[in-house]
Image (cartoon, rainbow, N blue to C red; front, side):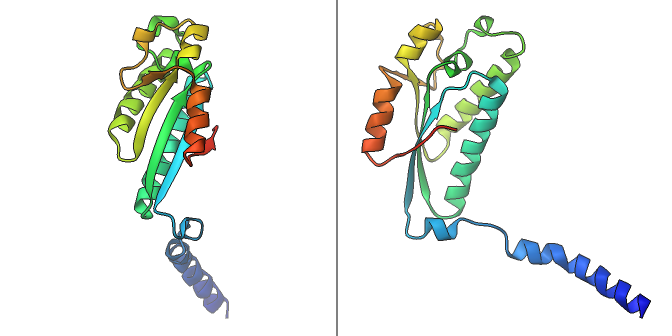
Length: 164
């Protein structure tokens, strides 16, 4: 009896991962009937580690949409303290933020070329307010007059607004 119980438990444990894998989570219910996903991301946090984390999740989301048959149309806007993290002049950053800024620049260069990324935009108001030189903004990022105006316009054009 005891051997039979142990064998049954071991068999159940061996099959459990297979059952979980067969029911892997997806977003098909929410995505039903959707052909495109238009999203404007409002990135303003000045913490390099958090910014890199958010960029990775945005990219993971982009890839997951594509895998599930939905074409992403993502716009990433940068404003506020995030402005300092998307510049080429690393001397303007603290020593602890510099390694994050290098990784952020590499991630944005990759994302700029990725399917589904429509635009990377930096707010000119934030450039001025954060004391960043316009010519120091990463070359992948287009400077716009005012990110709030851009975000208003994108929302009026059907883009969802996400402020991660």
